[in-house]
Length: 278
Image (cartoon, rainbow, N blue to C red; front, side, top):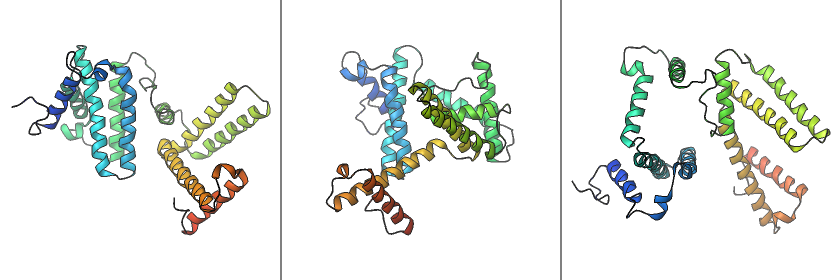
């Protein structure tokens, strides 16, 4: 069989691995690709994962196909660099994740019995905890959480880990009280004109408490904030459109006029009359 990656009769993953090998070839490869390292490619990997999530959120299925390809390219890229460094290769990555999935699903690949999705989540976490205990020298229940996770996601995971050993409120009410307490501390910091660093610390505590409430209510804080971002963007664009439709430059209107348009857009959304074309 031809080794030319332009040959579409070859299995797709073989073509992609060969493309990446050619791109990184020391003699005839692409100058840009040859210069890249794990560190320089990592930001692209994160970006592509977010683009996959965005395509799914918008139900843009044709885009999703392309975005999944972009994400797969990132895995192949890292695997090729690891192969060059004598660390591991793509085959080792694939076998490794297959072994992990088999190990973590004994009810599918073994004799274990799981009665529900909730029971499976519990079993999954127990297996992961056992793996961490073998692999990580740090005995903390918080060990192994990547620092590079989005802050809201990492906060939620830290709280879930702490809850495993009972460090958790049993219901939302005390969390709401904690949020009010943290908000009072932000107000006090502002009133005392404390340094920005102290104010940032108080705001961080407030955000952490809000994430805790979301976790207790089984709401994904990261997804909730993304939805809020999307809502703000939709409404603000509608405000801009209404201003321009009235012959005004949005930047020249001032807060009072912009806020009035904002309320009009919100009211339009509530009564179903539209939001200025957003």
